[in-house]
Structure formats: structure tokens, C-alpha cells
Length: 304
Ligand SMILES: [Zn+2]
Image (tube, rainbow, N blue to C red; front, top):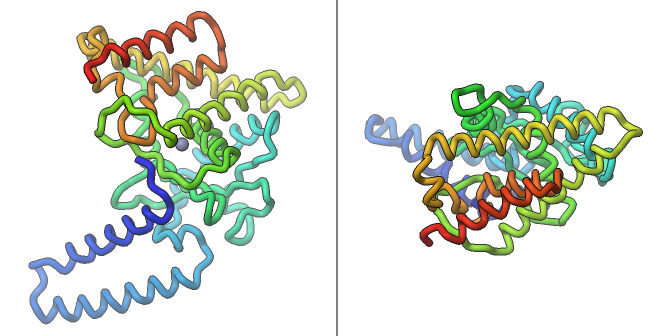
């Protein structure tokens, strides 16, 4: 689901109101309710005043910092920066390693780890207000566990390589001048195309081309090795997703079932198709082309 920064802050405000309402529910007596309500209002005013004064983008957004996932994000951003060194001036910065709240240079994009929120998100991008990327490590691990863990249908993938690709994708949004987004799927199944999905494809293409450039870079061994590791992870994602789809839903795969081949939500193309397309850009082989063609054909034949 695409959420602009403004719209998302509105949703956050409603979320906070909802959570306050729940805490002021029937379990509290009338007087206690008033005392609690008064205290809650005072605290809320205080929080808002603090948020208004704060230039910390995490606090301004109504979130809390987290230290959980630092080693994961450090590995991912190191790999992504090595890849970027071959073709882009953008660099990712860990917020806990630089002074101040803003990015230190015009080409820096700052990474923040966010504590768990009531409605978890994996990545949220805030390029308009602070040129920064918010990551929730726990939500990320939960999301990728479906296709990245060692199981009967899937082989294990290093999560930091997957996160590195996601970060390269987000840098692609910055490169293309896209507004802020929150990457989140929705249960709405569709085959519609729109400008927002086109932006997602453009960000994927940026990441794929960054990997190609790094794979050809013989001047920096870390760029080359990081590109190879991320590319290997992406090919394993494709393999794992196909395994889950075919073994887990054999009939659905052969019948081109909508829930397997459609897009989920209005902002993001089908995830398996995205990975197939990225792998096709990177490897550019008859087999990679055919995998995309076959998937697209199933989308055409699926019951609309
Ligand atoms: Zn995106």
C-alpha cells in the first residue's frame, strides 16, 4: 500500500487515538477515567510539544528508536554501499554512527532502526522530510522468513543480502526523485497497472543495474563480492518462491490462480514477478526471459 508521508502521519495519529481509547475502556472507573484522561491529555500535549521541538525524524514521526537489528542493518548497508560505489554517489549512513539528525552530505541517506509499532512495517522511506530510511528489523525477519528459511520447500538465504537489495531498491526511489513510501502488501488482488507500480519497477531496475555495474567492477573487490552475494540471494528467492508456489499449491500454479499471480495492493507488482524481472535484468539469458514470459502469460490467463 502506498502511503504518502502526510497521509501516513494522519493514520499514525488515528492509531494513537485508537490505542488511547482502548486504554480508557470500561476496565477503568468513571473518576479514574477522568484522571487517566487528564493525564493522557497532558502526556499527549507533552509528546506533541516535544515532537514539535524535536528535529529527530524518528520522534517527529511518532516512533521510537531501537537497537535491535543493528548488526543485520550494518551488514546490509555495508554490502549495499559497496555495490553503490560502482555506479552511484549515494551512500547509506547508520544513524547511530553520525552526529546530528540530518544526513551529513547531499549524497547520504540515513538509516534508522525503529522499535516495533502497532502496525509493523518493514521499510518506510521519508525522502521529502529527511532523506532517510526507517527499518523495523523484527518485521523484516518475519516477512522474509516465509521464503528465506531452511525448510522442505526452501533453502536458507542470508537475510542481510535480502535487506541489502531492499536498501538498493529504496536508493532507487531517491535516485528517481520519488516521494516517501511505506512498503506494505495488501490483500487486494489485482492486475491493474498504474504510476505507483511503475515507480516500484523503476526502483527495482535501479537496484538491478547497480548490481550489474558492481559485478563488472574489478577495481573494488568488495563491490564485486557483495554484488555476487546479493545476486545469488535473489536467484535463491526466485527458486524458493517457485517451490512454495508449485509444491504448496500445485493446482493453483497450473491453473494460474489469481492469488498466486496477481498483485497484492495498488502500489506493488507481484513479488515473485518482481524478483523474476530483476533476475532477468541481471542475468539476461533465454531462461530468465522465459521465466518472466511464462509468469506474465499466467497473469493474462488468470481469472480476472
Ligand atoms: Zn519501493
